[in-house]
Amino acid sequence: MAVTVLNKDNFKNEVLKADKPVLVDFWATWCGPCRMMAPVVEKIAEEHPEIKVCKVDIDENPELAQMFNVMSIPTLAAFKDGQLTGTAVGYQPKENVMRLFA
Image 1 (cartoon, helix red, strand yellow):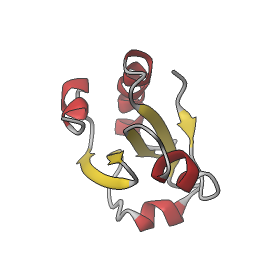
Image 2 (cartoon, helix red, strand yellow):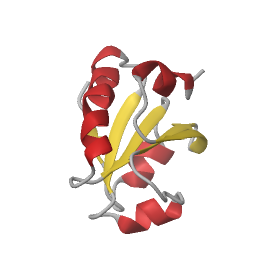
Image 3 (cartoon, helix red, strand yellow):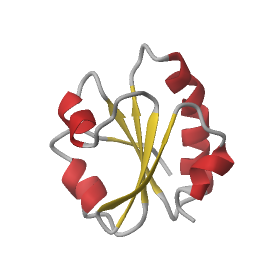
Image 4 (cartoon, one colour):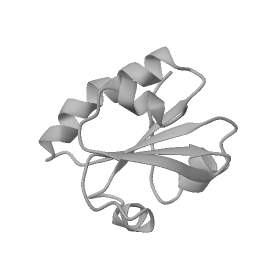
C-alpha cells in the first residue's frame, strides 16, 4: 500500500476519520535519522495493509507538528479510532514501530 502524504487540509479525513489504525511519520527532508527511518516506514506500508501509513513534512506543515507536540524528529505516531494511542521518537526498528499497535 502506498504512503499517504498529509497536510492540514487532509489530516482529519485521512487520520482522524480512518477506518483502520494509522501510522504517521513526522519528518523533514534535512533530517538524517528521518531518511534512515523512511525505508522502515515504507516496508510497514508494503507488508501491513491493515495499517494506513502516512507522512507529514513538518517544514511544510508546522501546525500539525505543533498540534501533536512534535519536539524531535522523526516522531512516529499511532492512531486508532481518531485517537493518538502511542508515539516513538528517533530511529526505530520495524519491530518497535509495530509495538505501537499491539
